[in-house]
Amino acid sequence: MVDRSSIALVVGGVSYSYAQRKALNKVSFSIESGQFTVLLGQNGAGKTTLYSLITGLYNAHAGTIRIFDHDVRNSSSEALKRLGVVFQQRTLDLDLSVRQNLHYFMALHGIKHHWAEERLKHELARMDLYEHTKERVRRLSGGQVRRVEIARALLHRPELMILDEPTVGLDIPSRQDILAHVRGLCREEGLAVLWATHLIDEVNLSDRVVILHKGRVVANGGVEEVLSETGTENIREAFGRLTGISHQEDL
Image (tube, rainbow, N blue to C red):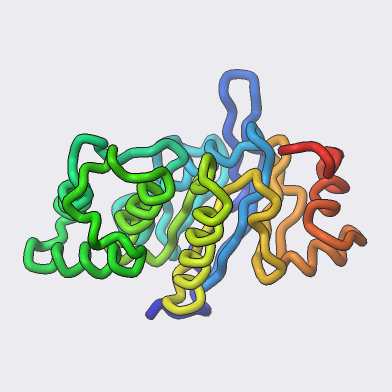
C-alpha cells in the first residue's frame, strides 16, 4: 500500500501559453497519497492543458511538475510509470475485444504474460466487467467503456491517477458508480486521484478541491475550508463567488 503521507503530485508555478493566449498562469497545488482531489473549472479553464503537461505531452513554459518527487520533464520515465491516465477522449480500439485492448496496454508497460491475465481479471472483476472480456468494445455502453478505461489505467498499479472529464455523456447512475469506485480506491489502497470536471455536483464535502478559472487557481483546499473562506454554504455558491459565474448557469 502507498504511504499516505507521501506527496504524489506537486504542480509548482506552472504556466503555459498558446501563441498569445495564456492557458495557465502560475498554477500551484499538491496532492498527497490517498487524496481524492477535484480539479473544478468550466470548459476552457485550462484543465486539459494541465493534464497534457502532467502526462508529458507538452512541456511547461515555466514552473515544475513532480510525481512522487520525479520531475516530469527531466525524469519522465520514472515519473510516468507511477501515473495512470484516463483521457477525456475515448482511447480504446473499438474493433478489438476488451481483453485485446488491455493486453496491448500491458505489453506496452512490460507486464509479463503470466501476470497479465491475473491483473486483467482483477481490475475487470472489481469494475463488474469480467463477463465482457471477450466482447468488442463497440458493443459496450458508454459507462462500460469508461469503466474499461479506468481498469486499463490501473493495470500497472499506478500510485497516482488523473482523469479528465471521465463522466461526460454518462447517465447519473453511471457517473455515481464510477465516482464511488474511484473514491474507494483512494480510501482502500492509498491511490492519489486528480479528477477534472466541470460538473459541480461531482464534488463531495469530504474532497479536496482546486478551482481553476481562466488559467489561475482561485481556490485550493478541503471543501469545508473553501466554504469557510468564501462564507458560502455549498461549493456551487463558492464557485460563483470566486469566479463571478452565476451559480445558476451551467459551467
